[in-house]
Image 1 (cartoon, rainbow, N blue to C red):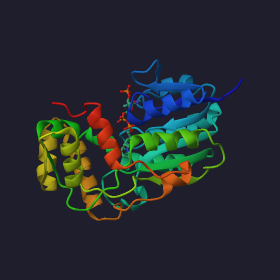
Image 2: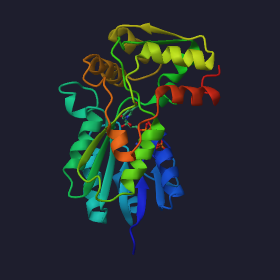
Image 3: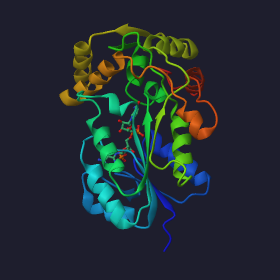
Image 4: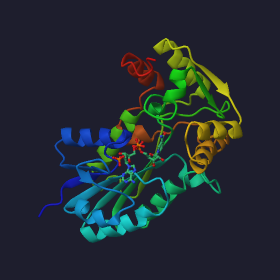
Length: 278
Ligand SMILES: NC(=O)c1ccc[n+]([C@@H]2O[C@H](COP(=O)([O-])OP(=O)(O)OC[C@H]3O[C@@H](n4cnc5c(N)ncnc54)[C@H](OP(=O)(O)O)[C@@H]3O)[C@@H](O)[C@H]2O)c1
């Protein structure tokens, strides 16, 4: 029995679907799994994990949104004969201290680092695609992005680069063992500048407005997020405000041998694809 197949978790999500497509194109056998995928995987239902882990050599792990389950998953992966784990996490996870932000990712990191398997952690900055595929999209199209983001820049990273790095790491056994890569774009961009670039490229009448963390939390709850989730998202901005995560790193280039894509390149691509057409 061979176990050359790579299990991609979160396979319908922003990184998973990009990673799976790259691996398939390169000729790697992929088992794409999530709650709505043909290979069904649910973080809250460990009974189904054995089947999904059968004959798997490598796993791309998109962690669950709660701390805990990755520990049990890693134990099951070890038992199933998995050799390597590549975990998606967040930039500077070791600098978040007492913040309630990112306990899910920190727990997943602990589980992966503590395993007997070969592991690599990919810690990404805020994705460029949060502006068209996630949280910031609806406010942009509605005409105003209001955040407690301050003037500290964020080195947004393009998901195409995150997926390029993940695909490289997943297909280069040994080379990235025990490494933690901090994946960023080439420069820091403030949220006000990001909104201005999008407004110009998409010809979108949208502005950026600075609000307090409390006002932002309240707006998220009004938009339908739970109190806890709203608190955690707002806490991310408190961490960013400290400025420790504002500068770019060279880690995309370390893995890929080329610099990361510019934020402007993403904006032009998404605007041309009609991402912000109202
Ligand atoms: N957004 C950012 O800027 C950023 C930056 C750094 C790190 N991160 C981290 O990236 C991770 C999210 O990755 P992503 O953006 O690629 O994913 P995503 O777009 O948020 O999609 C989530 C994926 O997980 C699956 N999923 C959701 N609940 C599940 C469950 N209970 N069991 C199994 N699968 C489940 C979903 O598919 P189904 O619905 O089919 O199950 C989907 O494929 C989070 O840990 C986040 O903290 C995000």
